[in-house]
Image 1 (tube, rainbow, N blue to C red):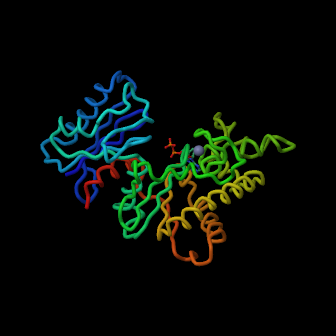
Image 2: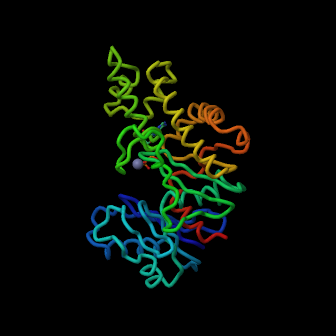
Image 3: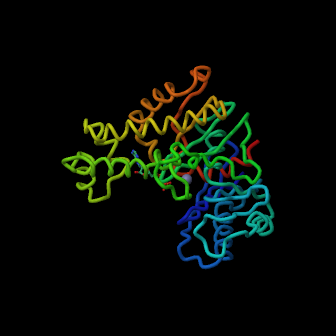
Amino acid sequence: MIVGVDLGGTKIATGLLDAGGRMLARSQKATAGLKSSEEVIQAIVDTITEVSGEHEIAGVGLASPGAVDTRRGIIRNGVNLPGWNGISLQAELEKRLQVPAKLINDANAAAWGEYVYGAGRGAQSMVYVTLSTGIGSGLVLDGKLYLGTSSFAGELGHTVVDPNGALCGCGQRGCWETYASGTAIARQASEAAAAAAEGMTQMTVLAEAEGVPLSAKHVFQAAAMNDKLAQETLEQVIHYTGLGLMNIIHSFNPDCIVIGGGVSRAGAAFFEPLRGKTGELVMEPYRGTYAIKPAELKDDVGIIGAAALFVE
Ligand code: ADP
Ligand code: ZN
């Protein structure tokens, strides 16, 4: 049995998995009330003890957002937890639980999970991309999770597709995620709506009917209803998303690209034009060498991917 822990921004989600990747038990705790790193570590240990029961545990994998130094077993930054930076969480877990532990960035965990148990099964080289609030990614190259010198490899959301583009949270301009994340789709749609003479489009009508801000989901819905502005916005989004995939294909020559995150929920309306555009953009020798697939693992991808670190 293996344990996977997903240390998210708001909760600790922990699962007990068998060697086939089936989840046998699950436990969850909110992080909101936790006031120190000691309390967070204790909460993690409690969820692990809870799911483990009487089972013998081969290892505990833990996924966390932000900069995770897998080789040194520490979370460098990026988690909204008090007094967290630099603590050797791996050593703490191993000491308290007396089992091997591994730490990993959440996008890398998702990549490994999709490779071992999901849409990337059987691939030689697979790149995982999550199109969510931002863009995360992870690389499995020649069958191995590629971490890089400081285990920070795979921040493909911050590769630049337009040096004169929109300002990104990272300080650069025109990062891929400022064009192709869910947040970016909504922003570009709002800009297009504001610039339109009428100002009002099917997208804004849908958002107002729900009483929520315009989101990527509304853009896809409006495009399906033949809203011209939504269709033009998506055309631009697909172009930039394809540019990012082109960069990935030219850099890593993967046979499989797996796309997850909220935007992937748009389904065929997203994947079909994206496959077409990417095929137009890549250089000739790369055509037909790769598949672009929707992710298969859903909400528990972090737990499953972290646990899969202990699968050979
Ligand atoms: P998080 O970033 O919190 O992990 P998600 O992976 O769910 O969250 O991504 C959220 C983004 O996905 C939002 O921008 C949202 O508008 C978008 N999204 C959610 N559902 C859909 C959908 N059916 N079609 C297109 N975009 C969607
Ligand atoms: Zn950036």
